[in-house]
Image 1: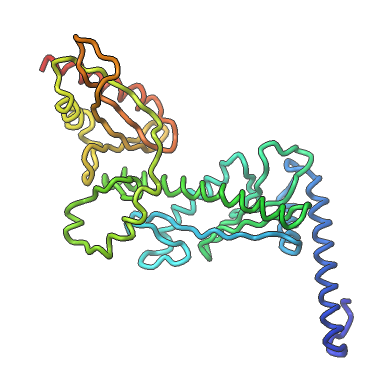
Image 2: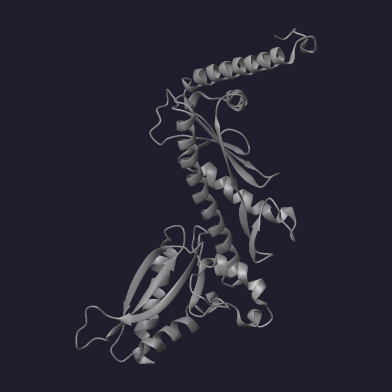
Length: 328
């Protein structure tokens, strides 16, 4: 078909020729993709990835797009990467860096280019890939694109694409949790996106309209972190539980308390992971006559398991202070 002069042919003939060309190119691309599936993941080179990605775009495949939204400290809010109104695009670079790191460190991905990753099953054999699934982070448009070619057809490709979207959305959530935790550690202010219950900076609320607060209200708690560590401290029977909590806040945790949220402190461990913590008292389940009817509970929230700096050193400091209270 390459040497045909389409201008000399009737429109219907030209249309048929173009459809045939497209079908032949699609068939050739899918044959190439099948051949490289059997090369094996460990044997795929940078050049091989380029060939695969080029042929994938010409084959029958399914595409899904995920808009990117990052928390930006300078704006104190969530910003759409596709429309970073009011900030410099460079303010989004840290978010992109964390997202790319999340993709690169995932057990389900292999880096293919600077901004693209091949997604594989955890039990994929090294000798064969079951399908082609690529995730690409497009900074220029502020989206993540998922492309899938599956040898079993479009429905199988769509199902795999939807599964991959769920995986990417979890990584985007982790990225924003990291951005929010970093911001909280740096500013000592609690972003609304990390806390479900309503409490915010009163000095800001006094000068803020309801229209300006509404985005925070809608995002409130959407990136709240789970409890990663829990510890109970018994109390001497002569110690007031409320006074014990206040003493721990004003002594051991004084330098880590948030300025706009009571009772919450932010802490970084030896691995540079950031956590927020809450100390509270509650009724003890097991109680003897000689013991206090309350215990102090430490709850540590984050996205990773805390290290010994929190689980051992901080716990030891808190315990020592509590033991000293009856003597004060």
